Image (cartoon, rainbow over the protein chains, first blue to last red):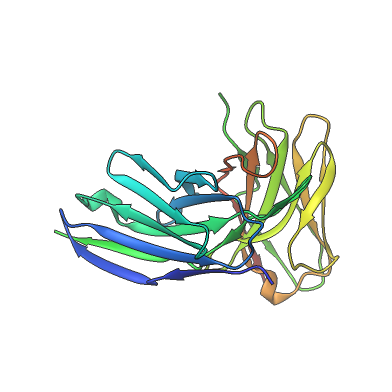
Length: 114
Length: 113
């Protein structure tokens, strides 16, 4: 069945360093890959997304890469700051005609050390 | 622009009862998706509604059902509540299906005693 695996489950980096979170998806029909940030007790917030016809996308300190052949996609955060501490979720969206669903990874808890 | 709003914010029920959760989509959005998020886990897709019809469903039993109204607001109904149904229920709206960004509400925290 459809599955999204996310690694690592926890990540601690020094402020100013980079953080990388990796995901693998199983359904080749997936064509849209959003990333969400969820702070404690708050709603998931879309931070960046990428579509299957693009290999890389960047927005300030955040970048996402996609390898459709290997079914891998990754989130890169550079120059990390304390406010980057949160749980990050990757997701994949299999889409067939008029039907779609979104499959989330299990999350990565990112902690930024001062 | 009005964001996604959900009600109630918290709810306590007992096993066997029924519950209805409500969601108002973001202005201009015609698609609503519902998710269940257990503590410490990622959101699990329940189903999606587009133009008042269910057009995608996750691995949830039929006692999870929904509706979408002409104004694109939506309800999630759960019958015969079980202890494992305790979770945060999130609603997300988008402008269309597939590769459209989904924006989440704050969720309803459901506790089953």
